[in-house]
Image 1 (cartoon, rainbow over the protein chains, first blue to last red):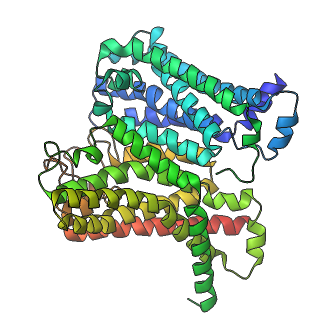
Image 2 (image 1 turned 90 degrees about the vertical axis):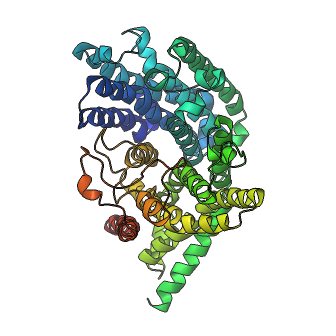
Image 3 (image 1 turned 135 degrees about the horizontal axis):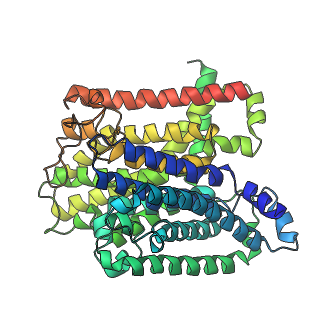
Length: 228
Length: 275
């Protein structure tokens, strides 16, 4: 347990503060609506879970590689460094999941969840935030391992997120695009693809994490002056 | 400005420019963004060369391209600059630099202009490359003139605004958190419809450049039926949305530059208090 607390602290303040701030901003945006309409408000509330939480978790996971000042020590420890990094990613995602899960519970209890027609129920509907959070987290983790630079990895995660916001329609014109679209609950083009989309996101995430672990096994890549 | 200050500014500008210009991720991130852009389609990057899809007028085409390039590549721009100022503390070179006769304010200004310019080079290369290809493809050399004008009144003020906050805000919060909040802000303050929630979109504080686009470049969306600035019936913050005229467009640019200067001054004050 001490170890997990330590890893949570090493994951950084951004990983800790990101999800609650994201949810708070999303919920305030929903209720600052000057022309109240229940469906729009509910959509923004679910959007806070489906858009804001994954963004915070994704950037958090993108900032894990390249944080340790003396990475040589980590590489010499009995625990492989990639396991340590995987633990920090798990802590980052688990904290985002806790914040999102609690928010979802409040939304279900207050009835806001049901007011968005495409909500997929209280149980399977949790994939609303879980799939994009894990997906974007895995992209961030992989980008962090490839670039070894939180700046570049964070830039890639945020750009991917933004491009799917700005070009929601063209991104979903073809089936592969629809399956990998992050915001299928609140901005999905074809409602029937939702389950496939969520599973595709989780599958892609698992593949990315596996590839990243293979890449991180080449520990000589992690030693360097300042990461580019 | 004394000679000493000017030479500090020039030296740190040149050094920061070269350091950032040679950083691989400054080139990789825009390249990946453009690749994603092309993969998704539906953007002017591809449509510019499709006679059936592109806007009829050269002006709408290159100004529209500027809006899309600016809206998307500025995200990476802000994220990449977020570690530049705090890096001096992280590498523990700040106290050494502070011990030199070079004044901290001039060093900050040099870092701002140098790193900001270097990170903008790939963005401008993408923009002018595509605009030049379009001008050759359609035989419309005046498209390049519009591209230069758009760059001067929309892209450059927008990037100066982003760079100032990207350098200084990470002094008061972790850089990754800044990246999250910056992207949320960029979406909220640029493209959210003002009648949906209170937003800075379409106000004078609009780094995407609604006022100059509307009043100086006469651009009204790629299809010509959109307005990008000015009051929206029923929206909050309409007090910040005067009617778009050339005067309010220049005012909007000035507001962005003043806010950028204020962010730099704030960052300078925070560092001075910590030193």
